[in-house]
Image 1: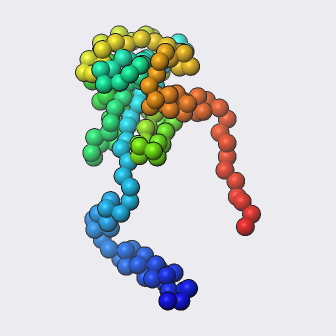
Image 2 (image 1 turned 30 degrees about the vertical axis):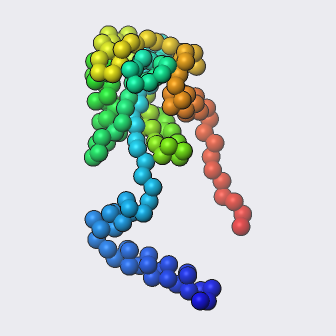
Image 3 (image 1 turned 45 degrees about the vertical axis):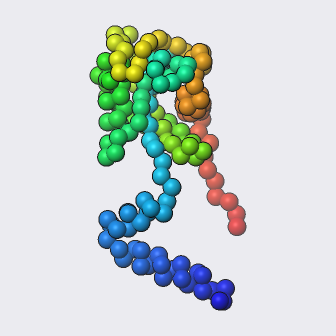
Length: 167
């Protein structure tokens, strides 16, 4: 086989793939590509503190949120999860930060929600306690929450732009 054949075969394969209708091409991608789970997390802030929860299925304190259901948008999931766990009705706003954990193939979309007055939190669902902490003083956060906190702290810094590299 010549050195050009793999490149030629790849181009032919890509052209054939491009000609497929959307449904079959998406099915092929889902079979061939790794899948990720997605979470939607709320950073609910009041006077410099964030709402934190003790949850039955987690160790330490965590932030309100949960998994995005199939077919659900993350901004809808965070609204649903916050209401289920805290009784609070919120709007999501825009994504504030995101965390990608390739080790467990999980992505968290983080939404920042600001409170003008301290809301009345009524823990429910899997939440069993709520408290307000400065984000860097959150006691005993679990591993996913530590990753989220690092992303939140990074979002407060000046972004590092990418650059064009010379060939």
